[in-house]
Length: 467
Image: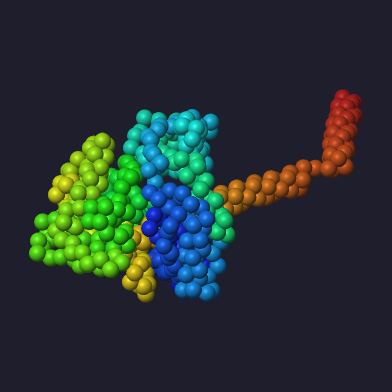
């Protein structure tokens, strides 16, 4: 195991369960699960915290179970999933004009571009949860996925912005903080689930993640590596359980047990002569429930959820041909028998179940491979993505600082050498005076030699004349 990698904890606060999973990546890039705990959730409905005290108790219970699985764990910070029908999304476009056009586009420019989107005008009761870049534009070049290192004056991008109700977010924050934890980041649940059950080929081919949770069904659509759409459908497994409870006149616990053990998402696959015997209440005679009737109730609600999925896909123009990767079903509700067939029949798109073992190392407990833990595993992967990006950014800054420092050192050394050469080659004032004195003496000597020659010539001419 890679001891240098941090231990990251994902906390999934769901309508039916609260799960805490601690993990660390090994040297092969796979997730080693170091701790796991879960508890029944009572204070959450449709993905929203409605009873803070009960939610705190459930979070603490999940943490205690996680500590029990590994007493050496120390959990202070968590990545938390967020969902609920208050979640909304919108598309925006942002641009910046760079001052230093000679320099290449850097991460600082991209960060500025993203940070500017947090100033987007939204309803006063809402808060921006995440800003996700889709495609970049550099001057006249479009559909750029990675602009860092390029040259350009104007840099822009299309963004997918996710918002949520301020009070709903505050309630989650309070519940986690009062449990003795600090929230590292809030992550939209379908994005976390997508990270756990998808591979690179899925992102490129085009897929729709349908995460069927207890209170909501979360949708995330990807195409050519880009997040195209997110939505939260306000129905989930809890609604199916309530339909069974009301439709068949049984207790909620009995309805849930029948759904899990005998439930079919496709009524045609259920046997018409099969019955379930439910014990009577307070001396009443036992009740017999038709498996076929049970399947009809389940299919009616699941068809409604899948109709919402079809509606959202049509809304963004993602027809059947574009989703080459099909629909990936995950979450606790995806375990219903024959749900794949119902999904393909309703949507006209191929479907499969997404299990969170895509990125898990061997040796984990079998329960963690269930689709209901996809969000929690995805939260850990999201945390590692942030950690690796921060480390990469620090390394790049370190290289830049070192490069700048070395350049300055070399420049200073070059200047010092030049100054030394100037000092060595430039004559001192005494040397200049000595040189001038030598030059004056040489000139005087030349003048006297010339005068001496002229006097000798004069006497020589006079003697020649006498002769």
